[in-house]
Image (cartoon, rainbow, N blue to C red; front, side):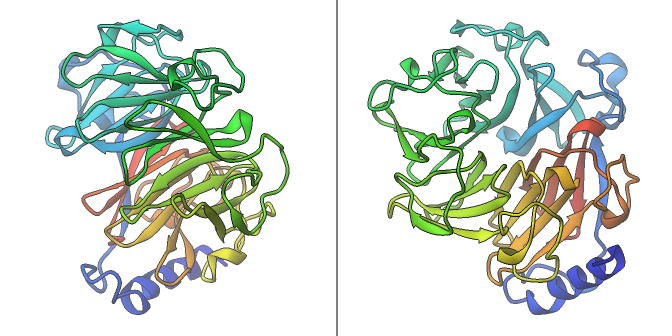
Length: 374
């Protein structure tokens, strides 16, 4: 499907066939992509220098991105270990954690002076404690909202597999990539190096395996979650109804998980590598190394980061239809404007805030926002 036909399909589907599920969309509404942070060149400027806006302030390989306290945007930089805040009122950046050096500390009292080691994603809980999953420290760390105390939540800092049934602090993870909270407040961890999905119980702090066997073999289309292999569990998000949505990087697919019901089923991607299927059922589409996902309550959709295709795709859960909402399929940097004419460079993170889809265009060293989709 060409860029122009994809554009026509998306506008038609949003304005007509999906209007019932997205009542807030104004017909004929223009959609556009703009840079909201970063200059396109990797770098770092100390906060407050000349009061520069975020679009004139460099960022460095941004990965996970989420809404957070103050209705602002927060993202982590995998290369520097920093967590940045984009103030949506002032449109300026600040750093809330990370000193720019790679390292692992079991405890610290000053987040801004603490080293973090290749953070891939961040999450906030209901009390505004911040959780950071670190690929190269094989751990999840927590920053307490009230005190700023940095502690380990899961993983002892050494790569491996162990600890199920015991305290998560003493467990071993292997290059964890993604975290999310389920509807009960338990923390889910994509333990990709172990090809497992782990869970840390909110009340007890104990860790166990939810799915995956450690085998690097194909995941079946459906079956029980427990005891079923997971091929490259890379990214996860949840909805308020108790579902989780799991992206398999090597598996090139998306699965819906019923955690309480102990089941999984494939809902997007055939498992083959490619870039096909726009305008049709997501289950017959192909992906190329997808690495991010976000559930949007506002339009009951999944936004999937199809990283190695350099695009963001949207799956409408009401219809099962998939399409591209950002990117051309070619690697590049922009330009801003028409989302389907804007090239991206290995994006990793996506989230939705106030009806705008935000994307970390990682190797373009930018954060972009797509408006007019909902």
